[in-house]
Length: 487
Image 1: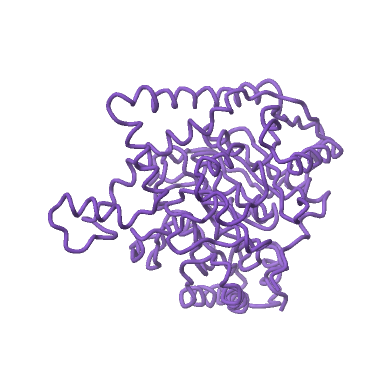
Image 2: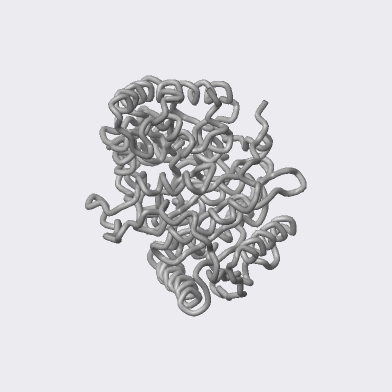
């Protein structure tokens, strides 16, 4: 059979329904590829026994004539999403032996559809990072160039899909952690509107920002995956009761007359010239397909990096306080007293970046600094959201801009300069702070044959328009046919 690397979810669905191959054969093929390309370090846990059992069950349903979009399809899951009976580590020493007793809502939904969970993906520890270099299990390598980062924090998910090891994967996006690695790895990734997908069973980093997203090699793949996991969940108080459209229904409709806003602030100093040229060329292509482009202004986006790292760190400080060495997770050996247990358990089990954000968050929430930092950041967050609201009400239907200011950089290049790494999220953070849906798709390569991503940002609950525009661009270009050469 053809390797999964050459097939989309749509093709796999058709092949399974025609019985060209079985789910067990497909799953076994993925497991062999995962083993063959273990040097990418894209996975923390391989679920071979459970996956083959799920695939066998899917084949029994297929034999009876049953089908659904994901029945028998192998998928991988970012290891910040809990899976019953399967180790969930968040790439941290703190949870290195944690086996959850329950499934996250998104996992329940995948299982109900008959999807096969083959593995848990590597990531930046507790989803804090943009390169995978904060993982306690070592960095993930970019399949386009193994000397470079794949982006983060959903590093392993993006690398695995780009390398063709699995046809799709789940990630989480707090400030760009689906979109930025999708850009660096040359695949499609979407962060839906905040509240579109349940966060129940997603290990919390920053609760007002965290959102589950999906990766695929094609726009249609992502539409199918998001359709499955989206929807209201009473277990999550931030999950919104909002009608769920059929994301695949209008993928092939034309985009004539759609107004695309091009934010001038996103094309200024700090943007790599090759990235700039590729994104502008992509926007020109959309115009040639019938869309209209106009310059818009999002003036408060310049504060997004500062605002995000205050708010996200504050929420992380609160959320991660539960890891104290007492209830579960890593516990320091032979503590002299309770204070020693707390201090050593946290300092020994948390990595440097996680410790940095906890300390920063504790500081901005402390007496005397709360109003100067956290409260002010929340006010500016509102201004950022109002910029988008004004633009969508008056000027455009969606926004097009770069996903990241550069292509993938070398492993180790920014480890000693966290501020420089934070600035890599400058174009993804505003949409996260505003709770808006954002999609990244391939739009070219730089001179080193490294992928470049185009980011589309939509109105709240309007993922369907993003999928439609992305599909139109994908149909009109050949970037989707490119794949890394893994040998």
